[in-house]
Image (cartoon, rainbow, N blue to C red; front, side, top):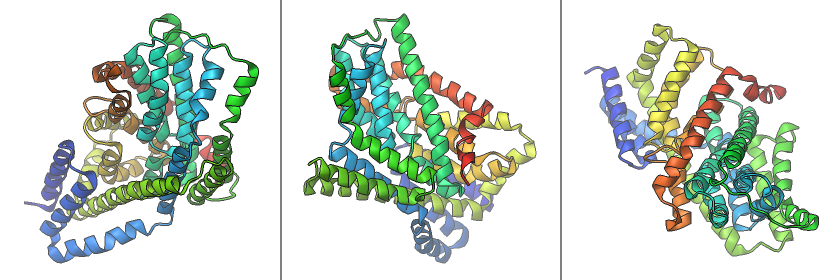
Length: 435
């Protein structure tokens, strides 16, 4: 049996194990380690296992991940994000679908400090869905729009997916952040437009509510969001004007959020301990997955499987647009069964050589990849955001209702992917403004 055949066989085994919901990091490490053992013997396998974890985790850029995670957890546990939905509701409730639009606005604000799709869905769902159900929103639509709103968390910086993509693809994190910001803003506009039009032409789906509030109450609610606004301005302003790097931005944001929490009287040692523990837990999980992906890359390179698959595509002379359509279909299929990080880290070792050979803009591809991965958070049978929303709302909404509701947003997201591909300037203009 040739090395390439062994590589392809174990790659197939890896995909099967991940679809059976085996832990991503452990599966990547064990299959890659076994493959190296089979190909090169125990000495090479143990040598790779001893060397690659250090090579991966000793990256300076990687240190931004725990800092951005800490920033998000501090903002969450110190209550700095609590006023987001309330402020949005008071200012936007007069619109058709105003509560749904408020949930999107709240998710966008939370996304700017969390970087996590699941955290975004859980936080906004806990607050917004009961309000929408009370206003007689169609249950499936209420749950679906919050599940879709959570996907904004992976686009708007600080995005953990974009950081990991930047490290693996060796692309500028700052440029990816600015490209993600552009894509996130376009996505927010598209979601708001969809909710507005459905509420306008199908009032029973999202009834308009009449909230009688004074201008003073609106301004007071808006003032409650100042901690988050200050933190976000610090992060984006610092990156854009070169005050600090994206790696330093996470630490700066976490420090400012902590100072604000102390100034507001929200700081307790218990809350800080919880935020630090959650940061350590999430960082450890991401590091294990990243180490597994690095081992997989080494195994696929040694076996020649990555070069073989890349050669097949390159020799076929596939048109870039046709290649992109193929990748969209692959990610839609994998997204039905795999989590975003596992899906990305499984495919990048194979796709990166093909993309470089075809002359793809790697910043544009990174943003489109992030968008495709987040569509996978909505598609059945393993739409994580849907199950997160279901878990926080209990029996008031059935899972099937949410899955039916998210189809509107999945179709819209696919249209946005097509838009980004055909009009790449939407994504590439902001990144081009920095070196």
